[in-house]
Amino acid sequence: DGGITQSPKYLFRKEGQNVTLSCEQNLNHDAMYWYRQDPGQGLRLIYYSQIVNDFQKGDIAEGYSVSREKKESFPLTVTSAQKNPTAFYLCASSIGGQTDEQFFGPGTRLTVL
Amino acid sequence: GNSVTQMEGPVTLSEEAFLTINCTYTATGYPSLFWYVQYPGEGLQLLLKATKADDKGSNKGFEATYRKETTSFHLEKGSVQVSDSAVYFCALSPTSGTYKYIFGTGTRLKVLA
Image 1 (tube, rainbow over the protein chains, first blue to last red):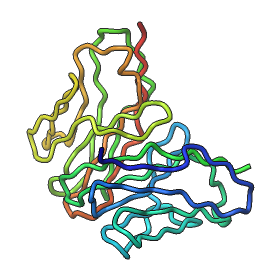
Image 2: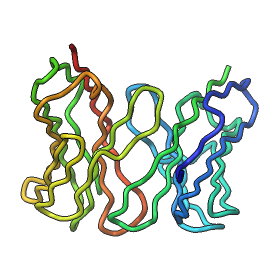
Image 3: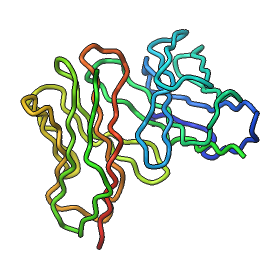
């Protein structure tokens, strides 16, 4: 089955530690995205990538970093510079055309203690 | 700039009631429009989409028509079920193909038996 996987489902970290969230897709999609969702809120774009080895900042990139070394993988690192990292993180991918929908992973809930 | 405005929730309905969730947008040209659904603790799933004016997207009894003249994409269902309880997001993909999809803040629907 094609799809997007995110791991782990739940993640706990101590304040001041960097943490990396995994996102893998086997849909052969060119574009990949990271969103943050806070309770009762919509989705806010953190980073996106249109092709391998290229990515752009979204609306709330401060305190986050990404890499896109392989087409199928787009890991997100939440650094200690992110002031309020506790949130639900969603990864998505799309073929890349303007009419094409995004496919979402199941999400990772990060809690910083 | 581009934006999506959804009606505030939560929306509470009895089973078999008629559902309307309003969505209006601001964008230049002809964006593609989408409705996504999110069940608790999960990622978003595409519910339906429309890519040009007067298109009607439909899926699982849900419908939405792309109205260019009123810049709207309202979601409707004739008879809701308890299993439809979820958060619904309206989204657009800009004409410019910037890859930056714009999501509404989401509308929570609760259907009572």
